[in-house]
Image 1 (spheres, rainbow, N blue to C red):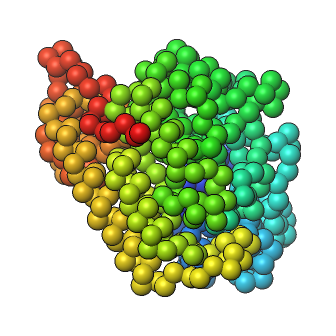
Image 2: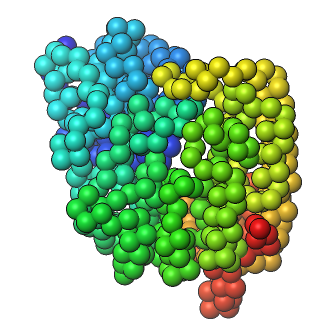
Length: 463
């Protein structure tokens, strides 16, 4: 075993924004040791796979990718391979048995210990760092994060989850809820704003269940404090739990224009019977009422959601209720998946009949077809409108760039003679619209007022 530090590292990230931020934390620790990133895994001396376990066969897919990295290691015997993320937490020491060339395992709650784990490996050990230490024992240095990109700063405010949804593996892979103090959160946001970020995204598995451990201030208080910080132009947060969304949280959308007119609000099903089996703790009536109050607080608020089709025991009538909900709410986007059993979850033990795979496929495609019609209609209503767009990347064709509207739509636009930098705000007129994106043209700020600072496309108030 070499005792020399690696010179180059490569991180592959699967899954949610929480994993993206964890990868930034991993990268920062390596860069502090003088280890530089590379975009080519074959050139790396250290490879980290940051895995996600939300979908079925997650472990199988992770081991398959680790097998590919083992082939690279045969060509470079001194290469190190680290297994990180939710599947790593789930597999633990078993991963070392299954993959002889694997060097170490790190769960999500132990991300801050990478440097110590790397040193242990260099001494000949094969460490497994899983489990969930107390918040006071977790290493989280905001000054040492390798913030990828310059258009959005992500800030974790709550880790883990205390919910007991019968389909979800997150509580066992990320542990119980751990709330960060409000002072630490505000300091990190201020740090990012001083660094030049114009958009901040607050992260948590159930972000709106955050409570300050010192004062018991809730998420509405945090939203108000963060949104009031000077220099913050855009504020987003994900993921919200419907049952935990208080009226005071709703009021913040009306109070602070810099809270983006977009909200991801997972409903999972339109059937109260299925929601009860899922253990979600709310009904469709509660969800419709929340949508009503949210849209009354902010004209044209764009909503997205998560939906599972084919949950054990879901009937055609249950599925039709989901389609009806989609038609009523008219989401700006929907993330829908076929149900997949996860290890240790309660859903497989509900003694409900399985939905045949072919039928689940049919239901999913029916849902996508309906949602595509809705998205196309909503996006076409935006043609001719003008948004202040936050640039996120260069376009695929010369002379174009890509960004996000305040309502979180993707827009590709011609930048004119003077392209702006990633992270800048550019005024863009929408000229074409498709189901999943908009096409536009950059406008002069001096010639064109921003007639749409938020999405005001016609969306019905739910009654």
